[in-house]
Image (cartoon, rainbow, N blue to C red; front, side, top):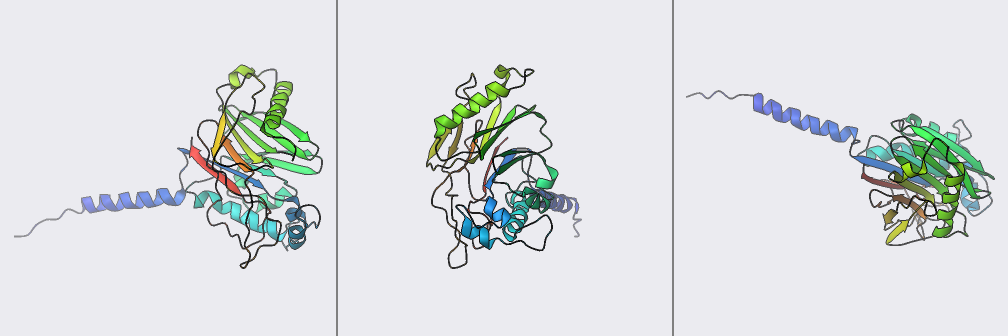
Length: 295
């Protein structure tokens, strides 16, 4: 007796497997938000042998690439391009860079990630700051301030009910001082067409170099001195700061404290070092730090 075997179930299974493979290959987007913060070290970006990272700055010589690109900037740009794919995502939602001298060199080396994003720049003293945001978000207002000359911050307000804050704190302010400065800047510069009460339910994401360490669960209320009492949290921040020596296979990069933070008001952020970061290669004196959490 001969049995007729239908190939339809096999075909359905194969199509299902191929569909899963395609999904993982392309990365996930709808249900997650991917955030990056990175102090990219102005000495490393400009081949400058001065300041706190003078040795590393001297080592980061200019390469043959255009846009005055140092070897360290080249490594950072190429690595940043891989982060979304290595974390199962298509792209970043937000990315905040501090000490972003000659940021264009990194931007040009990450055409599929940073190159597809909108951005806001600002300068305080000698420091450049840049915040990237996915074009799916519509910017309503960008408030740009400073804690003091050379220590900028940005407050970006989006139509979709998201506020993104990128900051580089000085070495004197604690969390209360940061909150005071952000609160004052918001109240003094908020556009007259925006009711501050309408921001009370917005999601607030805060990134940056806070210049102090913390462990365990950390909280902040960015606008504590206003009517916006939204609390943001993170847990177990990674030791991302700072190694000013030139790393090698014998002595790879290692941080001695946390300080590069990512906070979120809708979920507890868990900042980590991105996957496949090569700590044997000179890049910045800080680690890149990412967090992925529910949308």
